[in-house]
Image (cartoon, one colour):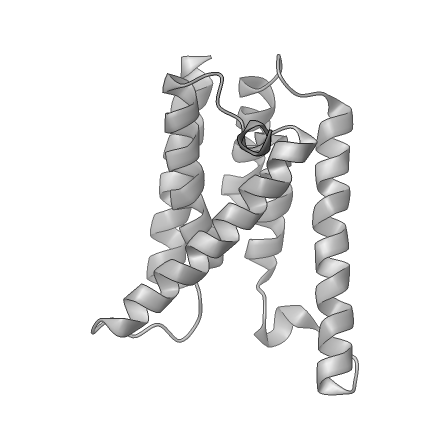
Length: 161
């Protein structure tokens, strides 16, 4: 299990580096991330959880498209100027990260973390025109995985109970 965690952390580190430096991630990093997360969590999640997480991401992306349609008053391709393909594929690659309920909180937490970090970076001398979402989310996911490794009972869903 530790070897899968190490592979996942290395791949996430590569994604952070790529997204912050080039504002893009290479698709070859995503299959090892997906497979690593799947095998790392093989005892705690099921294929049904992964499919529900995939459905959750699909609903979020569909809602984004509808929102942009209403806001722009025409059909807009969100991958042109709002959200990159690397970010979408990254979100699909991390679907085995948690069970369905915890994944929703992981997604929200990672997104809020990305937005707050972007605001903090913009308040400093660092100029950011676009948000390196996959890179920032990777930092959040790395912290989550390390914390969860040392605290195996941790679950976002349990925080609400």
